[in-house]
Structures are given as C-alpha cells and as structure tokens.
Amino acid sequence: MNVLANVRVALRALATNKLRSILTMLGIIIGVAAVVALMAIGNGATASITEQIEGIGSNNITLFPGQFERGGQRIQSSITYDDYKELAEKLEKVKVMAPIFEKVLKITYEGNSVDVGVTGTIPEYQQVRSVEIAQGRFFSNSEGSARVRVVVLGSQTATDLFAGINPIGRTIRIDGIFFKVIGVLESKGGGGFGSEDDVALIPIETGYSRLFGKRAISNGVRTVSSVSMSASTAEDVEWVMVQIERIVRQQHGLKLSDELDFTVFSQNAFLEAFDQITATLTAFLGAIAGISLLVGGIGIMNIMLVSVTERTREIGLRKAVGARRSTIMFQFLIETVVLSLIGGLLGIALGVGIAYGVSAADLVQANVEINTIMMAFFFAAFVGIFFGIYPASRAASLSPIEALRYE
Image (tube, rainbow, N blue to C red; front, side):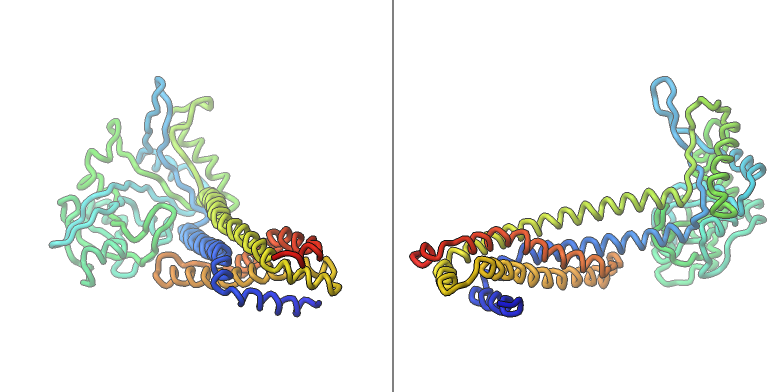
C-alpha cells in the first residue's frame, strides 16, 4: 500500500471518531500554538526594544555612580558636576557629552498633575540621546547660564498635562516652581533607560539653583545622576571607556588596587547583555510550551494503543490475507503522524492568530518568523513519529491467529 493510500485510510479512521480525534489533538494544538505565539511575541519585543536602544546610539557611553565597600558596608557613591567638567576638558575621541541630573517630581497644569522624571541637562543632550523636537524648540546654553525657568516636555508628559491643547508658551509648575514650556519632543517610546516620552527637560544650571536644591548636593558639591557621551566612532568606544576610568579614578583619588566607586558601560554592552537575556527567556518559554507537545504526544500514543486494541480483528484479517508486518506498522505510524500534523497545522494557525491579535491590541508588535513555523511543524511531525512507533510496532507484532480469536 502506498503512502497516499495509507493517508486516506488514516483520515477515514480519524473521521470515524471525530470527537476523540479532536480531543487527542488538543495537546499538540495547544503546544504548537504556545510555541509559535510565545516566540513571535518574544521576537517582536526583542526587536522593538533593540531598535529603541540602538536609536539612542550604538556609540553611546554612560558614566554612573557605583558602590564601594567601607568598614564592611556597601556605600553608594556620587558622580559630581566637577567630574563631568574634567571629562569634558580632558577626554578625546568624543563627539558630544552631556551631564544629567534626574529627579522624579510632580508637574501640574491647572487640574492635571503627573509624576515625571525631571531631567536637568544641557543642549547637547539632544545629540547624545538622539531626541528630536516636535513643537517649539530646545533651550539654549545662554538660557542655562541665565538660569531661565524653561522646560521641554516629552510627548506623553505633554499629552497627560494638556490633553490636546498646544502647550507651547504655557506655564506649568514643577514641584511648585513656575516653568514656561518652550518645546515638546517627538514620541520615541520606551528605551534602554525607561520611556523617553515621560520626561521633562530643563537647563541643569536652572535646576541646581531653582529646583533641585539640596537634593543635588552631596558632601557640599553638586552631583549628577549620570554623564552620557557619544564616541567619535564605534572603534573608539573601548578606548574612551578606558580613558573615562583613568580620569574618574584620578578625580576620586582611587589607586589601581582600589575598588571602583563608579560604573561605565556602553550601549553595545547593554545590547549584548539584553540579547542574551531575551534569548534565554524566549528559549525557556519555548521549552515550557514544548511540555504541552510532550503531553500531547503521550495522549496520541495512548489513543493509538486503544485503536490497536479496537482493531485487533482487522489486523488479524489483514495479516491472514498476506499483509506484511512492515505494512501494518507503516499504516498505524502514518495514522499517528497524520493526527499529529493536523494538530500541528491547527496549532500554527491558532498561534499566528494569537500573535496577530496581540499586535492588533497594540500590546507588543509580535514578529512571526517562518523559521518558527517550520520548527513547530517539524517538531509536531517528530512527536507523531516518536510516539507512534510503539503503538505501530505493537500492532505489527500481533499474531494473526490470536488477533482473529480476539473478541
């Protein structure tokens, strides 16, 4: 009997017990759907976050405060504004650099209020963080020097405060202090450092003198939350990071044997670490979904063993008229594979539907890849073959005489 004939026989056998066949396939359907949907959502989320991180700039380097041990205790250190000035004066192979001091404060306009990360910085922030102005303008160095109370809002902050009203020229309160809105940033979404839309940017000198107060002072000197910069080329990133460490060590009076009280990392390092995490997480979720396939395979094997028992006399008759052992085994194996593949195809359709549903709901832009679909399809086929071998072998090994006597 050829393969097509066996497939037709298998389909007739499955159609005889439609409900049982559907219930048997459920494990495969759910497992394949879970694999396809989870990997599509994982790939989409990874691609989206990676794009946003790369949008900040692959040559970007950030200096953060760190921790050091003293007297058996971990102490949080600070990066000072003087550290930034020293880096700005001595550091080479850097295109642009900006100090950043950030504090979550309440911003109000009439009856609306939001808690937002208010960022004190300089105009070079635009280039370092690759932000664009959608309305109005960015503040200037002269406004910073004059400590003018002006603010540039992130797109989401502007929407939350003004609900469609043009915010340019209007006055808001940041922690009770009046600021004039001069610009709104283009929407950028979540990035490596949180949402670029839920921000409010002010001149850092204005922030130090009129807003942040003692919150920006440590040991009598002004501090910054971080210093961001962009290396001239990708090849210069490692060199610049080494020089940052050397300069800040000197600023903090650290010896080569001392523990660093600051952290320097690049966007590339962050991206590599993120890729490893997401790859591990996606594989882990896929493995969990694969358990459903395993359970589904066991269910298929169980049903096929029942089918062998129910068709014992049929097997005996076929053997009595000359059917070979391999023919019987092949027939039952084909039935198992057909059952598994139908479940796999239905699972793929369900998984793709879930992925597109998540995308349509604007939760995550799921990315369905053909490789994922092919992997799920062939894995379903493998499950059918693997779990079908024993029932098929048992059917083929039945004695014709014993089978014909079976009631």
